[in-house]
Length: 432
Image 1 (cartoon, rainbow, N blue to C red):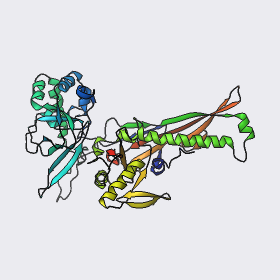
Image 2 (cartoon, one colour):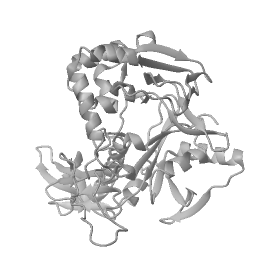
Image 3 (cartoon, one colour):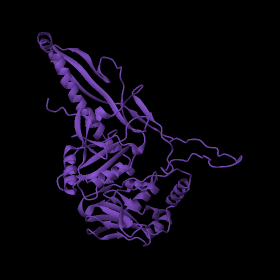
Image 4 (cartoon, rainbow, N blue to C red):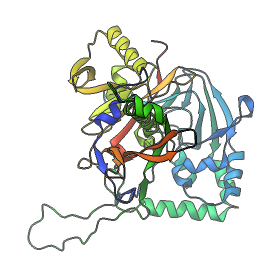
């Protein structure tokens, strides 16, 4: 069977048994509202922001009035920037909201010794300057430069103020967000736990409790199924030297496991590519995956267990290392020699898609319940089980003497803490 792959994700993930087919993830309450991504519609000159997509801006998250959002979307002005053109300059008044519809924008500042230090790279759907919506008068602390040709939509602060004078709901919502943001929080944006230390005598100690998110996510097990049909004559006569029914079941299970890994990466409900926190998504600086890009990806989390990438992305990374005269490491993982970077295995998986533009993604995972990482979910002990959380149930024999078995695999994957999963996006594999 040529379609069998190493299935590194299934092999390296710790698996947690669920009860009643569900798994709840309780997280500490997050006070600092993270940014989302803004959606766009249309093509060419007809492209424009989707009004409901403006809820991706932190200040507008959960804002209920679609009419006000539509009025805001209509006030955005389309602007185009050539490669190298300055979009916003450090020190200038921050008087507009910028939405990146196409291309890449680098945000940079001056280091301690006058060198240019790149803070991050923004791409389609990203934004900056949203604090203009709160009425704050600030100056840009960075210089935003177009790294490629860029299409952006700009909302001047004056347009926001004119709309705000007529939209009391928007003004009240923004003020409420500002009040919530002033609540004490830790460095990760979670509601703070008051603790006293380094004191003398008998001062009053702070009273506190650990606040949780009010609506924790519950993961329900997904299912991959098929019906295996075997003629009774085959089951009766061809039982040796190899049991043909058993071989049919074995190959069916292999196909189910391949689909399971594909869904755990690509499924829109549970897939890792769609469930990574937006704050843990980074873009390549130049397109191909460089050592600098992987360093940026690894720096976003503690104790990264492994990275997962398409084989062509790994090959592109090797080409970049060769061009720089850098040699990546090699480690033995489950009897197989794999590439490593900073002692973190870089495991291949062809389940990570490559887009029509020749770009893909690289995943970085911290794993395990104890570390608040990524875990696989299953429910062993189900009826007629042939593998953990996989069973084959006899469905009967029809009038054509065909025996049918319902083969089902139950699974899911959960990200316990947002920084357990990171994604390096826009990884170019067709050029170096």
